[in-house]
Image (tube, rainbow over all chains, first blue to last red; front, side, top):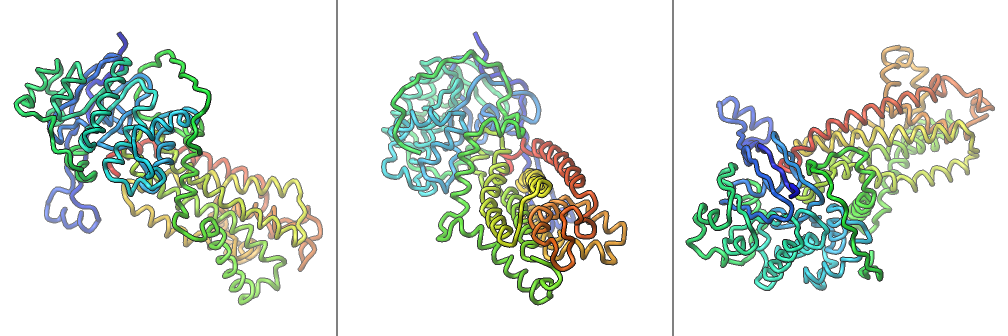
Length: 264
Length: 312
């Protein structure tokens, strides 16, 4: 077996700054208030993923799932410990791609694909498939800043799933999609898994984790609390007593989502 | 860009498994130029977004230096009368304006580049040097037509190319490019942490007009009381921008001024105080210094880059 992702004692510390300007900092210092505070979003996490495994990454909001995914994807660098990956990485982080709001959907597809490491020819070849999958129709040439959050993440997901990658990361993508799109995503993710690619899947939906994954990692306040079989992991989280797959499907505000689920 | 897929479908060849490696970009300017396709897209995006929603579009990169030029021409040339004592003073100013406008545009747009692209920086792994470097290229693209205008104006004023002059022009532009890239990298990184830096940069921009021999000739500095002050003269001459501007003027202005208003008739006879001593050697030295600054700024950028995603 080949190791696909190797995380050893990875720690990521965030600094909370309460005061932004020199004036505020000075006043706070005089009143002996705290100027800044640190917390560990990911705290000494170690695990190894073999090539072809699909991992469900679970945990409550703010437990560090997205941060861990950012460390694996290479958006963030661990403060200590190490994160090693093999091959190309694609996927979505915090329900949406890195799109530039001023650019049209079309330009963003090209830019995003290029960042993920696709060449111009590769993108052109897959462009129609991507647009078909995203199903955004005539909005293709509209700046993505005007997209609804559903359209936004549909396009991002479409680019990510059409990238040739060895490791695929999915972060709560199903939170904003409508039912037909969710179904399409699940089918596509099954395909990716069956192709033998490594998958890291963040979800609160116990049923879809059960369906997709063969191992579960549970994070608790940044610490890896559980690493093992799917059903035990779901029981560990007490997610098995409710049918969490039927969460409300209405649109979640992107910024709110990031505050609550992704970055904290 | 087209929506038509390639008629030939080439299935990707499965490559042998690469080694385990940290996913975070190793960064570095070499990595930027290895991914030229991505750089090209970023430059295109930048060119389009810089003038988005504006009627005149790219014309703005001509209007601004033209207005500056007219203003200086009127005040310095006509009101203060430098036209009488200096031949082709307009060319003198314009050759400096081209170089300085390139520098200021590189520096200020580069400083904002990472923050401006935060939606991408926060979610996509890539060498973040891409953004400042793309701004440098966009600024170069915008500067090129000004260079063409300068060229035409100089020819009209009687300019003929000479080897040293052409080399001087390239050397001057090289200094500005390297130094501009270095400062764009450094301040783009710092600006992520404190947005004060973009204001510091725009404040500094006010100075750039005055610290180089642009609206006053080098000769005035060299022959004034201040110029005889050794300390002042050394400080003045250790600014790479001063040397770059002098080199540009050597390339375009000096050849048009020969034999007029007391200027020597032969290019070879033009020396101090019209130009600094050993200006070509000085230019090479400044290029070397700028390269060292670039390496240092790149190192600082790499250290700062580790925290970009969380601080934006």
